[in-house]
Length: 287
Ligand code: OGA
Ligand code: MN
Image (cartoon, rainbow, N blue to C red; front, side, top):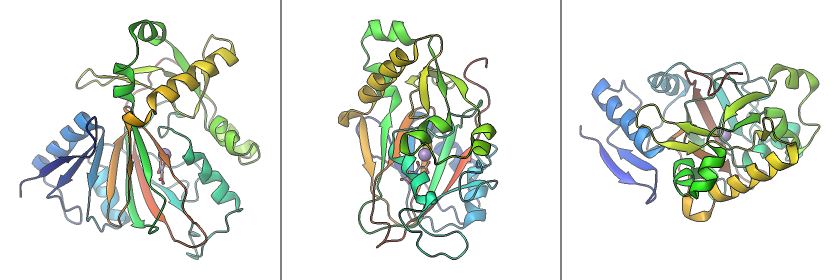
């Protein structure tokens, strides 16, 4: 069956129809999905009532999967679970519980796994249960952000390297949210501020809430630059919000977009999103 393509936003993002992930995906169709991912940075597939095994099988077509860090409720598995439901009992987790607090860091604009030496290629988020209101996920194009920078700023930042850490972004929510052992598990790493897509040569401004400062710069000055660049990258014209329906699968390019969660009433509604994350193939810079 032929695939159909509809843009999600004038600048990036595409919805692809004619795919059924409950069965095997043929290599030709996958080739088209992969090419659309490289081109559009965010790909939406609707109506995919998949289980964990089917999600893993499709995700692995993009490459080997990451294992989630131990701070996530599904830590040590291929899944990052974004949910207000207890993983064992399925009961709603109270809003002041540490697990809900931890998820609040998703409200900051970020790119997944930039705190790992080899940052992620892409994430695949499957909507299993959605609240009827709230809980959208927003996306911002880091390619559009790069292209829109003035030339003098491009020249200034092209070779810069930032330090990223999970502890930095979690501390913005609450400095008590990560234990010493969890901090030790994922020490800070270095990432280039500007990344080039190896397939189409397009550049992206690689900022994220995990980025704490610029290597070799006074911390406050680097922080100021990162804030300014993030504000630039997330201006409304460069962003769109995805309103979830159950069965949606969204694939995003962690090299080329920022994303963030938005609030929902976690006492009243259930939300269960399962994320698989495809590993990247190399560090962005020598560590
Ligand atoms: C993620 C994430 C946002 C959301 O799964 O990586 O940031 O809206 N999710 O759940
Ligand atoms: Mn995320």
